[in-house]
Length: 182
Image (cartoon, rainbow, N blue to C red; front, top):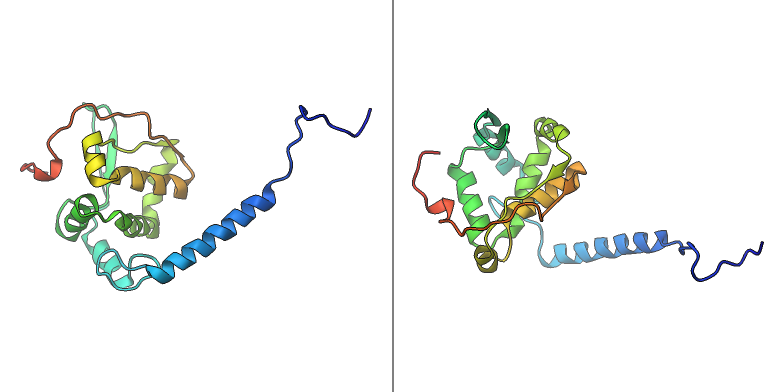
């Protein structure tokens, strides 16, 4: 038998050096972006390598409630939340959703990741699915805010991300305009 492999064989040239090259290329690109657009705290706007300065992280921690609710009459058993929808969190979430500030996802994720007491929630899941928004809203906003958060959480926790499981079929009135007890 010859050492020659035909073009139809299963031979695949090594590409590990390309992956490393790409990673290096991306790091350089990110460093250049940081020079042009330095990372700032998503809350106060001061320079911050983690997109959340210590002062603001402590402020958020003081507002955090780290709650969990359980249900028997829903299509899900429980949900956990870090904040009540009020104060600085409400203000920043509204900025994130409606004022073209998708970069605020970094501040939210860094807060979440910093407080490791949140991690155990993800031990029970093998998939992360974002809440869908209507085509009209995605066209107006340019992004799905829940998808951005879901992508970052899936990457951090190494959980599968699926974007095509839920679909928005009705363009409901925005929750932010509803007046009801939360």
